[in-house]
Amino acid sequence: MSGNNNQQLNVLVSGGGTGGHIFPALSIANEVRRRHPEAKILFVGAEGRMEMEKVPAAGYNIIGLPVSGFDRKHLLRNVTVLARLLKSMRLARKILKDFKPDIAIGVGGYASGPMLKEAQKQGIPTLLQEQNSYAGVTNKLLAAKADSICVAYEGMERFFPKEKIVLTGNPVRRNLLDCGATPEQARQAMGVDPNKQTILIIGGSLGARTINNAIMAGLGKIGEAYGVQVIWQTGKIYDQQCREALVASGVKNVVQMPFISNMDMAYRAADLVVSRAGASSISELQLLGKAAILVPSPNVAEDHQTKNAQALVSRDAAIMVTDADAADNLVDTMLDAVVNTDMLIRLGQNVEKMALRDAAEHIVNEVERIIDQTKS
Image (cartoon, rainbow, N blue to C red; front, side, top):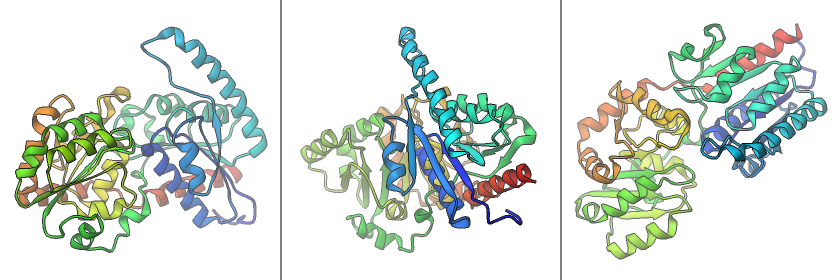
């Protein structure tokens, strides 16, 4: 930001719902704070969602809106949804009046809809960050009046006005990229054998039922796989069930945990990653150059995870097993893949070619450009 650095900078960040929306939002906020230590940063999330806990833990203030998603199955329930939406719009107006942001940034998720809509009505500049290869409904609705739309995939002019699109990539947690450990050290830190081929299974912050069921059913096969071991993150909800299945199986080459806090070590330990195809997971795999088997979640808007996965598969940068096929094929596919070193190297190199680096920096460059333009 040129010239007038002495003025107070107020930045509003809105959205959330999943780690895939929250981690990029925090990365953007951290970059703003790094450049402008005096800036005021306010988050607006949805009451009762994950951001209400993760954002304060990262040292930022957050206000929750009583907003929720439309119920496509039970249309009558949408009366409450509409009432909540109207209340959220009123609250959004009050937040804008009190906080007076120089810019509002939307990262997708329920809260960003009413919040950015109100900001646009009041002529406050807005920037959208779209993580997926298939644009979300909220961002599509906000696109026409947005000042800039930061995307992670090429070809997004199908959804957004071409002149507003900036290809920045998705910001990922910085500590993942700064891991200094060797694979052997990382395996030791994760409590597994430093010298075995290692598969890391992650179901996202909440766990993935299909992946967990496939692994439970295939524990016998995994136990017989000589020279291979598995780090299995099941999510809290499935923790007990998966732990009991593992104990009952007597299999020794699997380490199971509900949640992995040191993801930098987990990734470094892995020769192959089995994961859902959420945007932030894919960005992490790209930046780290990790061979992966993607099992897209079918329970997401517009089936965007399948489209995210296909963007990699079409470039020979990942293997995809559909959710429907996971029960029959996932364990065999991963056990075959992890010992095929040539294929792992090829997938890792191809996925790394797709990486867009320094995304948070590029997005904050856009933020500064928009604020400068407004002030001049």
